[in-house]
Amino acid sequence: MKSILITGASSGIGRATAEEFLRAGWRVGCVARRAEKLDEITSSHKAAIALPADVTDMAAMQDVFTTFVASAGRIDAVFNNAGMFGPSTSPDEVSLDAFDQVINVNVRGMFITAKLAFAQMRAQDPQGGRIINNGSLSAHNPRPGSICYTTSKHAVTGMTRSISLDGRPFNIACGQIDIGNAKTELVEDLNARILAENPDATLMPMMDVGDAARSVLHMASLPLEANVQFMTVLATTMPYIGRG
Image (tube, rainbow, N blue to C red):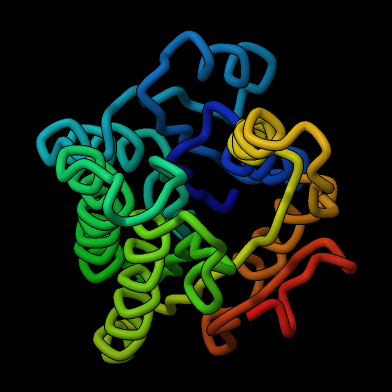
């Protein structure tokens, strides 16, 4: 049975992806801060293991990897998914604390997960594995009022490229999925903010979150000699191409 560790697995894209991998017969380690939400997944799936932890806590995440490897034997893939949007406003109105919080979760937390995944995949026998980072359309074309999130996701793209290069000698593949407007709590919260400012605003098209989850499964299911370096999946009529 193949194994994958998924961060931010308690809701949204992370939860949909965990459930998709479980349906496909994978052993799934579900990481998130909210233990009760993880229990909702693991209570109905024998192949799922709840691993409550904060991705920004190095010691807690080391325990996560140790526990999951002890259960699964190895880690074939990691979906580096945990993240947050932060304040939606102009740069001058963003507090330094708010900026630091987004960078801490979206960059530092993602680095910690990638660092530990790389170490495990380098050490295990047979050597290798796959790290999939959750980027964003904002890693390429930002939306207004997203300086914290956009900055963090540009950093994720750099992280993806570096891991891809450094992983070659150890059979470690790294790719990035950039997802646009899947129906998740994060996007619904963003839409609520938009409507609060302008009740007559036209909301952008959205796609089913399951389509994003199946895209991650495709990336993870490839043999290690093949890699999706960057994948963009979005609602078809979303104003991404040409939106700048």
